[in-house]
Length: 144
Image (tube, rainbow, N blue to C red; front, side, top):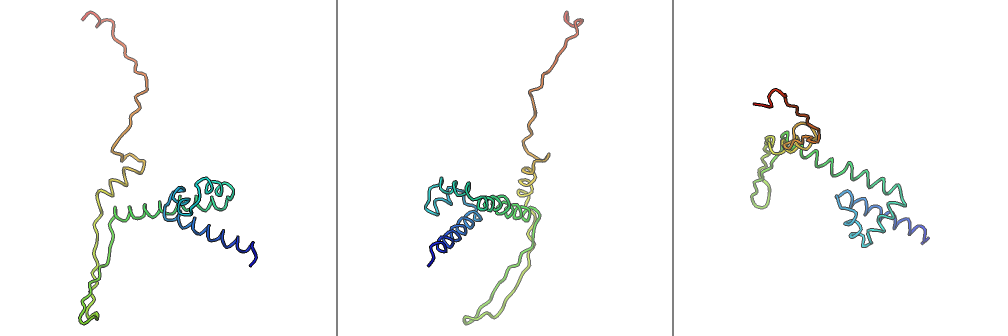
């Protein structure tokens, strides 16, 4: 087999492993560990291959973060789910009951979402206290 073809297949497999690990939310250190390479090697690959670094950046900015945000919004707003109950006799299913259930919005998820949006809903409000305060006294009140 042509050695250049072997190298391409090896790189494709390596790219897939890196892509899959990043998609699962692994850090660069964890990806390097899973590939049994030093982290500095992975960093060099990112630096040398803009396509690879762009792919990883896209995964990290849109992948798991988006899934978590979607799940949080789902829990915060409520959702519908189906539950299946099976009745078996003699190893065969004789009855299947599908129940639709509405899950109520979760107040804690709503609070978390609002507190972390960067709007006026935060629990902790920071006030700038670095402004100078000028206090003047009426001289007529000095003798009181």
